[in-house]
Length: 103
Image (cartoon, helix red, strand yellow):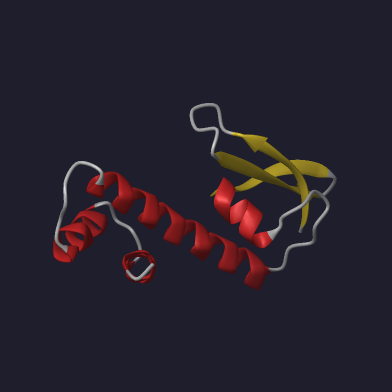
């Protein structure tokens, strides 16, 4: 797969839609946070393999957990168990929860 283009999302300017070139046409692949985009240095025309995409999507899930935890903590101080329960309720992956709580 080769990255064809990036577009910003209409409701959240901090997220990008990634489109790949498949059989000569652009197709939506996945959406990522701007921080993940910068961390992995994604560029137009970059070749993507399955392992790299898996790593990017795992980093995206960790970023999602981190931002959800920050938002939850913005209202008042909470115990780690409260934050963990909140993230589990939001159906976030267990590995991403652990990574975000250890960050």
